[in-house]
Image (cartoon, rainbow, N blue to C red; front, side, top):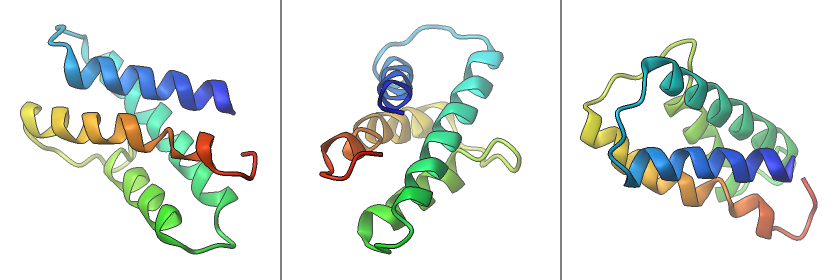
Length: 97
């Protein structure tokens, strides 16, 4: 799971901070990766019901590929930049995910 979280964070970082012209399939894959990563982390933290649990539920809703939220490209870059660091939070939590 840790590798999946790191790879997802790298995808988000590249999308947010580099202006590459990626095909639409890349963004669909990114949505699925972030969505699944967020759901797994939220499921593992469901007993705590703390701020991190709520944060990952919000990230899962934002990146939901089944009912996508549409925003402008610059807005998504900001969200991707913030999410690229937030998805790394589980790596620093004492309990292994």
